[in-house]
Length: 241
Image (cartoon, rainbow, N blue to C red; front, side, top):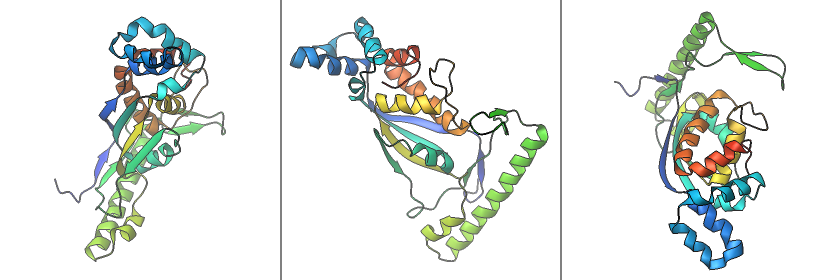
């Protein structure tokens, strides 16, 4: 396939690149307050025997023991997702690809059929409902046309010798970008509490669907690494400690 031809995607990708994260990390961090250096004995023990402590820390919002771990994700998503994502600053580190230093690839977002298109109600009380066949057709055709035109203009400027940092100005926020995002479990839980919608949540959240797609994939990876911590998070209303 010609690399200069736009590709239209309806999903995001999230890859867990590396991690140092387990339920045991919560336990030795918590027990140093009463056991001092002997808390290191927790490292070799089965965390299942101390899941009550993890639940207690979550329930009573003793948050710092959940910070002694690390996860790095490679995320590929539309730029408008990253603009929301970067509002999460405490406990997060980011490095995103740069349109100043590389030619940006023609990968663009178009909502899939399951994406609700219509907003009903006023701010603070609105809901999203299914779009009609006609509305989905309008969205797909309008986005494809705009993406093709903008990327052709971008290529035209690059071929004329214009700097990448100038030419990129014509590209829309539906363009895919990629970044590394590093966090700990506490900062991830705060992100999930705001960027996912769940019946288990004590405090309701109304995330944009596209960032929720990223959050769901991150949560799935984290739940495998720290199943007891994830279960306690869910059981206690999905509120970050």
